[in-house]
Every structure is written in structure tokens, then in C-alpha cells.
Image 1: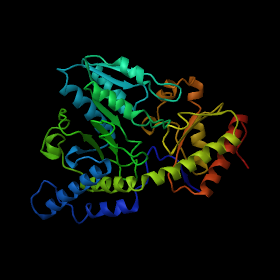
Image 2: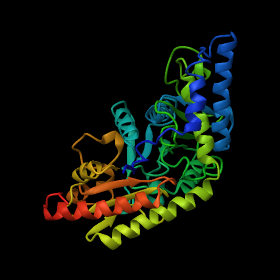
Image 3: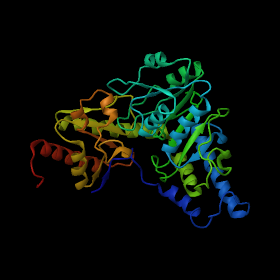
Image 4: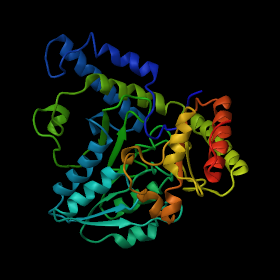
Amino acid sequence: MEVYLDHAATTPINKAVLEKMLNYLSREFGNPSSIYKSGRNAKLAIEDARNKIAAALKCKCDEIFFTSCATESNNWAIKGCAFNNKDKGNHIITTSIEHESVLKTCSYLEKNGFDVTYLPVDEYGLISIEDLKSAITDKTILISIMFANNEIGTIEPIKEIGEIARKNNIIFHTDAVQAIGKIPIDLKEYNIDLLTLSAHKINGPKGIGALFIRQGLEIETFMHGGSQEKGLRAGTENVAACVGLGVAIEMAMDDIEKRVIKVEKIRNKIINDIYLNIPCCKLNGHSIKRLSNNINFSFTDVNGKILVYMLDKVGIKASSGSACSCGTTKTSHVLLAIGLPEKLATESIRFTIDENITEEEINYFIKNLIFIVDNLRNHNDFSR
């Protein structure tokens, strides 16, 4: 049996998404910058996708800009804002648990004259609102804090952060890659100026993302060349992928409240099953303020990477950390930031589910997890 428990890393393309995309990979292959019919049709398809994203986020369609991925969107949002506002100040506030695409972008900016404050988090991965207020100076031009953490699933107090940013006339960017499709998002209510999203986390294609830029906010051009994306992000558009993102986000936001409740029940059952059957384990992240599909556990005396490998041998796909950092020997910066000792941090594993997981799959997963953890702890062989 195959059980896929790594939806935070990537998701399978929905059949309806793929069907819509195929038309623009074959019949309607025109360049959207061309003025003949197939080009015009491609351009219309892009704008239809843009409208779908705007409707899902309750914003204007001309506030949505297509990118190649969330990493590009994060780079553009942070660098674009920093360089466009360097005459006003050089201070940026972020957190110690951001995705690498944010942390490394901030590190780059530090080498180019910017000052970055990395807010600490508590044992659950939450920032302190008081720490945020204290970090603000008259040089602060940007606050960039993720909506929900990709490893431990903790949801940050985004509404309060947005209110503080707006009150202090500071631009607020949030990486919402993991939150889209799992949390209803109201950009105006949360005072969000810039928001990053990605298609392949919501059953869309890889290689396409988007950046919301609030109307009236000016940031530096990221890609220079043609006039695509209002001249701010040049390059021939990936029409099929844009279409895929539009369909995927429309489906992800449809009936989202009911889906979240369903997934939370499944998540809680799995957490309870693990606690009841496996001793010496710890749930990482907040027990309530967490993404509906995220389960991150540390199993004492069980190396996370080895556990991932052994689960894979029986058809269960999981992760020992962020997909973007897999293959490295580094201990998770997120788990270290929430205060886990380095050994316990290496003994962690992430399971991320969706609403389609079956009871049979859950039972198969739990049965094998119990068996493998017990055998790894006792250094037994795996013959049954």
C-alpha cells in the first residue's frame, strides 16, 4: 500500500487542473504577447487565472503578479520592498523560523547595507507581539513574517501583526504558501501588503507562484526585459501553469471551512493514536494554533531521516523537515528555534495529510509506525 503523508512538500495535480492545463500545452499554444487569435486566447486564459486568484484572496485582479515559484515571490517581495524604500530606512523585521528563501534573502540584504532583526519564537513557534513592537525603529521599512510554519504548522498572529505594521506605516509581507487552502485569508482585514503563494502546495503544477502586491504599493522590478506583468516581472508567461494555479486555488478555497474541520478531525485522530501507542514522543508546534493537516513529532532515540527511509520501504511517504532542505546534514533551524535540544531535533518527522486519506491508510500507517519505531529503538531487524 502507498500512503502519501508529505503534502507540505508537494501535492498531486488535481485531474480537473491538469485537464485545463493540457489545452494550453497543445492546442492553444500561442504566445500571450502575440496579437493573433491563439495569442489573444492565451492572454485571456492568463487573465482568467488572475481573476480566479483575486477572487480567492478577495483582492483586485491587478494586484496579482505571476512568478515562477514561491521562492521567487519571497525574493521579489523582500528585495523589491527593501531597495525601493532604502531612502526611508534600512531595517527589516522577520523571524528565526522563516523559510530559507526568506532567511537567505535577508542575509543577502544584510551584506548590502540593511539591518535585519530576527524575532525569536516560543516553544510552540509563536512570536511575541511585544517583541515585535519593541523591535520597531524609525528605520523599519518591512515586516516579513510567515502565515504558518512549513515544518511545525504553527499559525502566527497575522491579524495582530498586520495591525501593528499598518499603525506604524510599515509594509507587511507574509509567506502564505502553507496557509493557502487551509486557512480563509482576508487581505484587507489582516492589513497584508504583500503575500506569497505557490501552486504545487494546493494540487496545482510545480513551477508557478504568485505575489499579491497591494494597489498603490511600489516595489522594485525583479525581472527586467519585456512588458509582461506590467513590466515588473518580464519573461514569456507559462500559460498552462498560470491556468493551473487559477483552477487549483479556486478549488482549494471552495468550501474551505468544512474541509478544514474534516482534516482537523483526521489530524487529531492520528496524533492521539501516536500518543496512545508510542511512548517517549513529543508533538512539535502549537496544539491548537496549527495547520489542520500538519503533524510533527519527535520520537526519542529514533533518527528522523532513518525513520523516513524505513517508512518509505513500506510505502509510506513522510519528511524529516522542509523539502527545500532535504539532502542537507543541517539540523532544522525551526526545531532548534523552538528550543529542542539538537539530538531531539534530529529525531523529528513531519506528516502532512489531506482530506482524501482513508481509514485503511491511517491504520496501515499507524501500525507500521509503531513497529518501525519500536524496532529502531531496540535495534532489531525488520523481518516479520
